[in-house]
Amino acid sequence: MARQGHRIWAARLTGCFMLIAAIVCVSANFLWHRFTSQPNVVAKTPRESSSNLSSDSGGALLSHPLDPLLAFARKALQNHVQKHQDYTAVLIKQERVNAKLVPETKMALKIKYDPPIRLQNSTRQVSVYLKTLEPKSQAGREVIWVEGRNDNKLTAHEAGLLGMISVDLMPESRLAMLGNRYPITEIGIEKLLGKLIEKGERDRQLGPATIRTTENVALGDRLCRLMQVIHETPTSLVDGKTVEFEFHLAQIYIDDERLLPLKYASFGWPSMPGGKPELLEEYTYQDVSLNVGLVESDFDPKNPNYGF
Image (cartoon, rainbow, N blue to C red; front, side, top):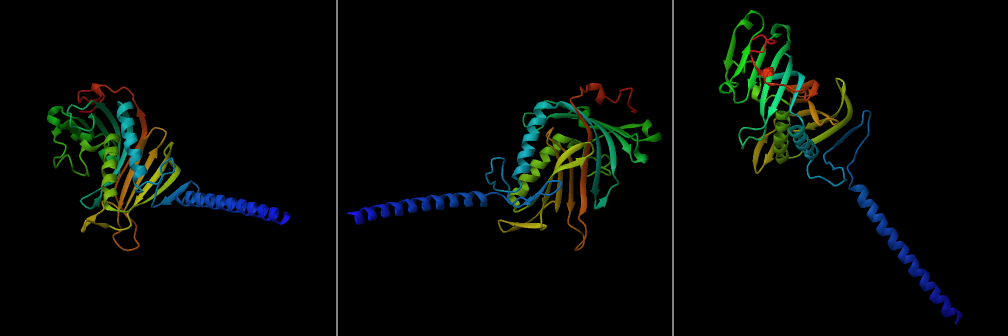
């Protein structure tokens, strides 16, 4: 009888141990799966991470490394359209035009938005004022363009004695495009966000990319999140066809507090092995002041404060 009770007790102990072992195995498997499902993030100072896979704020894996950048651009564009009616800034740009790197230009910028006048237009109607500050040889040049006004032509005058004469030009005319990579119709934060979405969606279809993110990068008086998009090779094979990437490296400086991209720069592949990537274009928005209350006279060549 005692021996039978001992066997029953032993059987119960064996069952308990087997149950505990099963629980441990399941827990270990769950923890291993949860650990290995997280992206590999390496912290540096300032905080930096690099990966070919990304995760959203909930930890779920995303299907492409560009998804966080696309998510930011879409959110920022919606915020910009809904909350910002105008802004002033200092725009610093440098572009490669016809394979030649044009000297850096610094301009005072005013932009005012209005609701779109065409239902199919995805962005708002825009009014633009530009005044060149640097280089010294161009300082004083002014340009005004109001979408849909003046037969959609811009009005401009040069610096110095040439400033006595104002001219009306189509934005994409040869004279208006002289020394510029893009027409004035593509200027501004709203257009930049649209281009980020357009380029991101295109590159997402072309294949892999590497994203490197660095937090707390100083840009003027703002702390930004720097996102770098890297294509390791110039081309990708899509449906049996070779397609070229537009850039080797793109850098986007994001002001997360205001949901604004304050700087965008893109670089091509080095001209020779081991060389530095070549700058294609760079745009920096400094001293951005939002919703300052710009009015029609800010975009009128007859404004007595202007030199038209």
